[in-house]
Image (cartoon, rainbow, N blue to C red; front, side):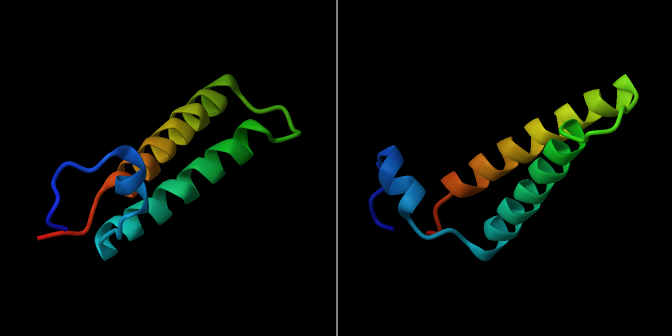
Length: 73
């Protein structure tokens, strides 16, 4: 893309490189796994719930950052 000054909507709808598509997919998977552990109907130790929360946040951040990257020169 020639224009370096993209607004947020243009940036999120612009094409993303193959590498960041893979990072986005990993982030979505991490967020889903963490969310599933947090929402598990069985009693789990507090440590596992805490780690699952961190995994969910990390996956969400990975997904957001990877989606905001733009394929360019």
